[in-house]
Every structure is written in structure tokens, then in C-alpha cells.
Length: 131
Image (cartoon, rainbow, N blue to C red; front, side, top):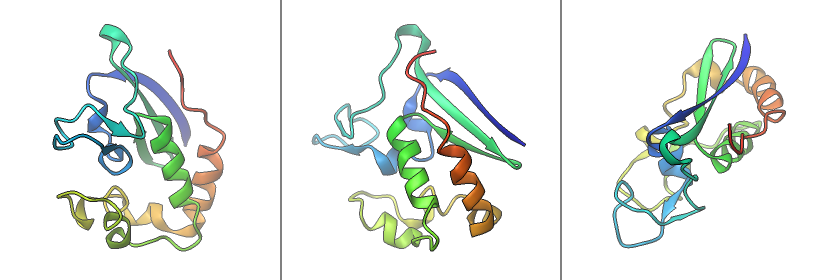
């Protein structure tokens, strides 16, 4: 089954990829920071932040920014996946490889035969600007 859905959420940082994509630039720890590179997603007043959920063959993938979706497509589109150790090493912070979004994915989603189709599907989806 293939599907995508958009809704509003109260906190964009709950996305599995948020910590790994949006790097804090100020002196505050990531969870308290309000300065990021790339910039944090925009809040739409009382509605909250946009969250895109992509369902693909029994698995859901959650994104709260266009940058997260782009990184996902770039990493998952590699024929040979990098290790979580390699990816987590590129990010200064307290979180280790076991908490990296790639290490949290089910094994079935890491097979090239699955990822090839997943990336093709995800590449056709534009992150929403406002719902």
C-alpha cells in the first residue's frame, strides 16, 4: 500500500529525523534551541507544524520538514547504505549511532529492492507548504 498524509502537530522535534537534520547553531542544547541549520520548520499559528507521513508497503515514514524528506531520499537512494556509526559521527552531539533514524528503521526497509521503490515513490511527493 502506498499513501501520504499531511496533518498538523504541536512539536516538529518529535520527528525521527529532526535531530539529525536540523543542527542547533546557538549555545543552547538541541531540545531547547530555537536556532538551527537548516532553519526549523515554520509554525502555522495555533495549527502547529506540518507533518508528512508516507506509508509504503506496510511501513510509515514521518517528516516535519522538506529538508528531512530530502535527506531521507538521498540516504535511502544510495545502493550501499552508510552505517549509522558513520552518519551519527557527522553530527556533534550526545546522541549515538543506535538512536540515528537509519538504525531505527525495520530491516525490511533497508533492502535495496525495497528502498529502490520507496525512493521512487517518495521522489514524486512534494513536502506541503501549507494545508
